[in-house]
Image (tube, rainbow, N blue to C red; front, side, top):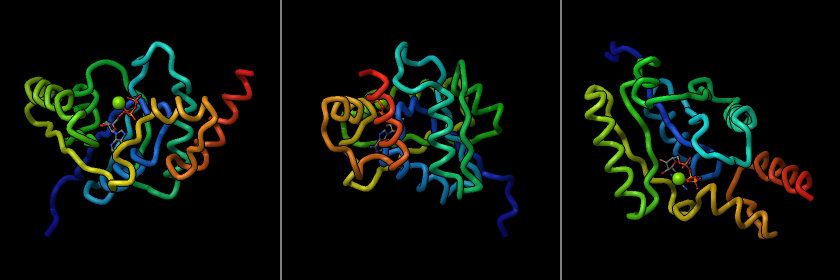
Amino acid sequence: MSNHPPRVAIYPGSFDPLTNGHVDIIERGSRIFDQIYVAILANAEKKPLFTENERVAIIREVFKGRANVQVETFNGLLVDYAQRKQATALVRGLRAVSDFEYEFQMALMNRRLAPSVETVFMMPDEKYTYISSRLIKEVFMLGGAIAGLVPPVVEEKLQGKQKARR
Ligand SMILES: Nc1ncnc2c1ncn2[C@@H]1O[C@H](COP(=O)(O)OP(=O)(O)OP(=O)(O)O)[C@@H](O)[C@H]1O
Ligand SMILES: [Mg+2]
């Protein structure tokens, strides 16, 4: 008897670009929630490598086979966006203790702002625990191999950016 309203979650981030760590968390989230919105924070970084539209397109491409994964951008307070989506959960990934302090602060602030929205933490497969978008960009731009750490479409798009810079 699962006569509950759809369980909607938001997975917020900058996703500049999407990594296999993000993909792992999105897949886990999409298995326990009816609907998961990957929400790209607009204007978070002053100089993102990928535009908002490029980031949306990449994530949509990777999850085109998953009907319950939606991709959008949002502005302003995350909890306001979550409430507009009638979401009851915020999904965040935890890689290591280093993520904890910031995530702890954000979770408690968001709870204070919107007590009905619960933050849910998930751990990725351990092979992705050291990956961040920043590290991927840095290694790639210096010529290091990133295959297996990002979806193939991200590797392609990174190559495009590199060519544009030369
Ligand atoms: N490899 C990973 N495994 C699990 N969760 C991750 C991973 N990378 C990021 N996350 C989580 O995804 C969410 C969005 O993070 P964000 O967009 O900042 O990604 P990031 O890889 O940390 O990027 P940046 O290096 O630009 O900070 C956060 O909850 C973050 O903890
Ligand atoms: Mg980060």
